[in-house]
Amino acid sequence: MKRNLSQITNSLYDLLVIGGGIYGAFTAWDAALRGLSVALVERQDFGGATSANSQKIIHGGFRYLQHGDFKRMRESIRERTNLMRIAPHLIHPLPVLIPTYGHGMRGKELLKLALNIYDFIGFNRNSLSDPEKKIPCGKSFSRNEALRLLPLLPQEGLTGAGVFYDASVYNSERLVISLLKSAEKKGAQCANYVKVIGFIQEKDAVAGVECKDLLGGECFPVRARMVVNTSGPWLYHVLSLLDHYRQVQFPLIKSFNVITRPLFEKYAVGIYGKNPYQDKDNLLNKGTRLFFVTPWRDHSVVGTALSPFNGNPDDLQVTTEEIQKFLDDFNEACPDAKLKMEDISFLHQGFLPNSIMDHQSRSGEVRIQKKYHIIDHRVDGIKGLISVMGVKYTTARDVAKKVVDHVFECWGEKPPKSLSAFTRIEGGDIEKFEDFLTGEIKKRSFGLDTSLISSLVFNYGSIYHKVLSLLGGETMGHDGLLKAQVLYSVREEMAQKLSDVVLRRTELGSAGKPTDHVLKVCAETMGQELKWNFEKIETELQEMKVFFKRFIK
Image (tube, rainbow, N blue to C red):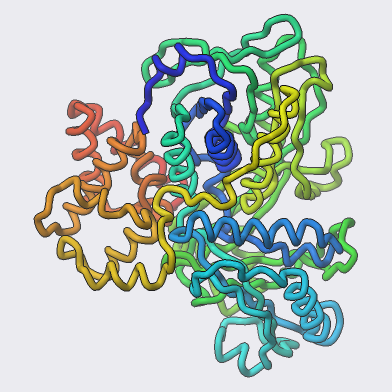
């Protein structure tokens, strides 16, 4: 990807996307596949905000059973398959274990029934030919089997466990980057660190946006037939730039997940909390919220903490007191875990839309929006502008498809068939993942050991050799691999800052702070490539150290 602002400002696009998270990336990809000319601008780095805050689970919608929402379940199962198809190196099946207690709402009888219904609704879930992507049927375990697999499970009243299968995303940030690189190959123009500062309005229509380059300081226009606002928590801030625009907005929920030492191996696990919680939309209510613990890169992701938020999204902060309260609540629910503050290596934080309006809230109550919203602003008397409020990482592709369909319909045209569910993104040219991985490990490319080859394949997929080729054919050590990844991030993936490389182009820092040596190698390599002086290198290093200090006490 090349950051070419002069080309962006000197072209008229069919579609301009504001926001480079998972919804914006899929919108750009789907539109480019259908032959539209596309530009996308992101005010910070791609995939660096809410899209990076997830439990790394691609949900099949099992929890929708308690709502009786079989339609959304079918959508989630379908999209889980689609993601495994188009990004086989990044999306992999994941077993999820739910312990059972007694014989009521949390009992094994009800859970077994739920597993059977889930399997029935997902009858065609195994349409992929890759054996590694198979989603098995749910199954039940006895109490002894459950404790043998997971000794940390709370034991009081435990009667057994049920297991169903979802999928996990190895690197959610690289999924966004890969989508945008794929869109660029189809003609899309993308730029990070470009802030929208106003709309170009002609009578009752939007004809583009005014932008500011946050790196160079210049302002410039970008014109398009249609503008799609996928700016996530900043959606209404962007809309406030319109002339005379006033609309009631949904408040936000602050959410965070903690990255800890590994608690459960192989299985994601649901742990019943002790504090009462009731979702009024549930047909079946179990009385408390579930903590979810997901195995991820030799760590566990524990979440999710939720609280109402009424400020500016730029001011997002999670306090030490909030983290400690979350750990206390989790330890009360799972006493043998004994999580401490020093067990936390990182924090993923972001926002979700709250369906409870401010005037309806009672004692900090939150309720996550369950359905996405595609807002055609013709209802406000403004043509040429669509806003998207997403709620799930899993179904972002499906929502993007619907958005692009709607764009064509706004123009009075029949939408061409969407190809984004079947077209593999960059790195996804893999027929059978396990065979591919085993074959690449046997090659021992550049003298790298098994763990490093595996990491490269899980991050870059079928193109990982392009990363290694940047340092020539000689055997390389760990520092050489770091340098190759930095060079690839700068030359091919539009990395502008050290944080772009450490947090989003690689897996170096998204689970915890790298060593000072790793940061220094990355900064100096990046500095040499981008002609940074000594002061700039030191500034970038200091910014990274300050960033990690926010999460690691």
